Amino acid sequence: QVQLVESGGGLVQPGGSLRLSCVASGIIFSMNTMDWYRQAPGKQRELVARISVIGSGSYLDSVKGRFTISRDDAKRTVYLQMNSLKLEDTAVYYCRASTSRAEFWGQGTQVTVSS
Image 1 (cartoon, helix red, strand yellow):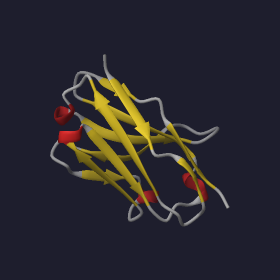
Image 2 (cartoon, helix red, strand yellow):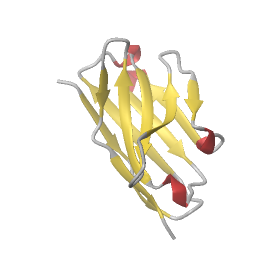
Image 3 (cartoon, helix red, strand yellow):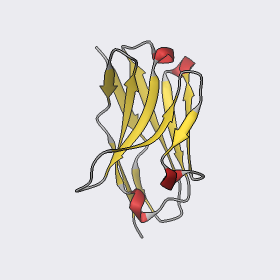
């Protein structure tokens, strides 16, 4: 059974930081591209960051320079370091694992940026 379990969300003030983690089981983690998506109320889910199997990262323009995605294949974990958080970063953040044949999603973790 495949499981992706996110953690690390919470309430933070503007300008603050959070680090999200997503631990995977039931997949060959090192063979999966790992993504972080987010969905704010009333908005479509959007891709925030992606890291390839060789560790190459890419980002949504609005988070470039503030967010960093990384992976630890030995721990089967992908991280999203979020710095300089803004009100508009408030959303549910989802982890996604994918290969050419399948994709799997976590249940999401809430990030709320508020003063």
